[in-house]
Image 1 (cartoon, rainbow, N blue to C red):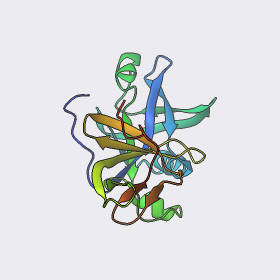
Image 2 (tube, rainbow, N blue to C red):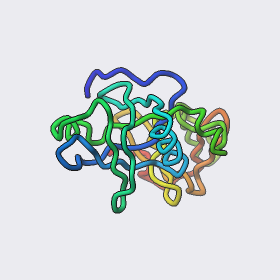
Image 3 (tube, one colour):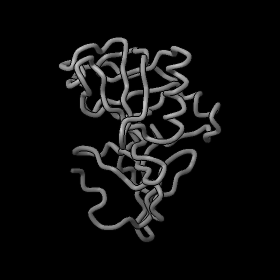
Length: 178
């Protein structure tokens, strides 16, 4: 997947690819939230193009619940070997699907993350790359110097605004990338 192009403008991350499933190139899919699930159902019905990191534009040919995850098939992934290569890749959907399904128009993806401790002014520490987790445990994946980290979106020290995500007196060690 190294060197794969970024998705076109107007898309948002919707799911993470899990392990392969079966011999036809299907994968386990882990949607980030209920809106992503709705957008993926719409994509199957409407044949809308999506973006899969490491592949590019794809069409979702099948999407169904499978245990604690979802199973998906894509038009450009036909072998178990190709499916295995995509583990941890991100699937992107049109951002306008959020508005159609009642989500806030703005997301935190692409916004700077600022740290405020005590009386010190804000310090930029990273950028939100993606939304992860589900509705009960939403997470922000943040690119920081030296790597990436996950922040609990619902924590009392995380404040989301139109221009940035601000961390006000977060716990020590929270910003250490793994």
